Image (cartoon, rainbow, N blue to C red):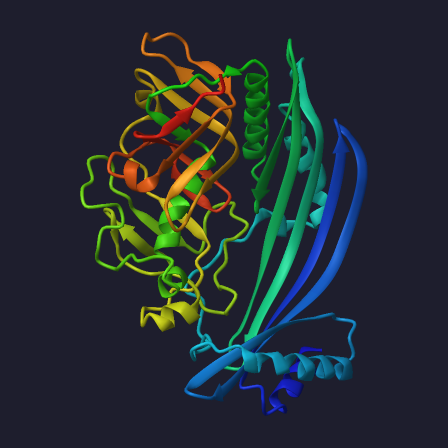
Length: 434
């Protein structure tokens, strides 16, 4: 099939260049109601994604492109007909010219997942056991769960000679936990990603979610406060995403970001912790780890921010080329260097530690951030035990808080992020629910 498609592309003069991504996915899915298996199914699918480039000149040189999804059941004559019809649209896309990735060896080696050692179906029972290991509490437990485990084989080819292939494993675990409180019953949703078999990590994530559900059931309304805010857990990644966006070659090119290399991305004065961020092709248990990006460019580690100073733009080849910047590729994993302050030391005096939001967002352009509080811990200045609170919201702007940020020495690793477990912020608005 691929050889036939390539032959068609090479014989159409309007096709100046091309890229093909082939994905073959084998997967198994389990659906649970409480601890009872409700459904078990498997799949095996193939997808072909074709990008065609058309170079042309009007007032100046342009490179147009069009993306086509080809079904593997199409005949070659059907594919050729679709290619010719779709190519017409490329002449209306007026991008500045940019190159394709060139062939070359992988810059790193991705360690093989333990899922590769046995057929996928053999892992379903051990994963299920890890899922329910901590589901042993009287008033709470797992209401329902969905477990997905996929083996994905990817091959990337282009007309410049790239031919890169790799196999990755992607696991998704969706759970709804519930807790029966004295005044209300609470349900919380959690999505866990994994690429390797770490049963203790899954069990620990489930346990933490059950305890969050318990605390949410007994939480009081958040009062109006003027205290430091501690972001803990997943919101930390969203908070730091602002700096990734500001360092993005695509956003700089499109004037969404005005950050310049060699200048501070964290403001003129830093009285707290300086930001250090690097991007990595590989991070343990990240489903996004890969030696190649979608363009077929070999990826390597790159430091984009050091001591608060922007060192490199990053992103797909097209946009780094536009900025005349070294090609980095779309590196998928983020590592933010931790600080020197333990979380326990951050929990001194009065504070509000937000553990979960209904929806936390950070605007990549303005730096505005905020969200409605699903669960937080409030500690008053008198040293009494922190109490769980809910509702209300926080809001602020990164430019107002980045001078005094304190990063914990405790580290968290989840999905495609590694960084401080907690960030302590000042000048954050807290709107109470009362």
